[in-house]
Image 1: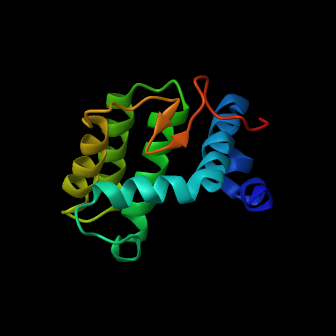
Image 2: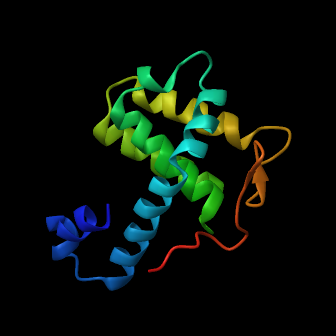
Length: 131
């Protein structure tokens, strides 16, 4: 995964080291937590199995959940960013699907915390990946 990231032309052309570091943290974080993120998606997708969710929507959901749970990005900002991504890269139904799942996670009675959700431990200060 690291080799693919480093060889991506968009990464190589990016002038901001901060942007590259942040993107690296997100990509590696999602990759490391993919099973836990998928479990959360399945629990909140109302009878949709992971295999049935289109790759675009699934990628947006994984990325946004990771931002919501492992970074200091506000939950609403992560959801809004996901909606914008789904408008750009998904079809006409993507926006509502992505918003519904993420909003459902955000509104759970047990609340999203960075320490624990669905029995999965999460860090208070974001990911623990080298940048």
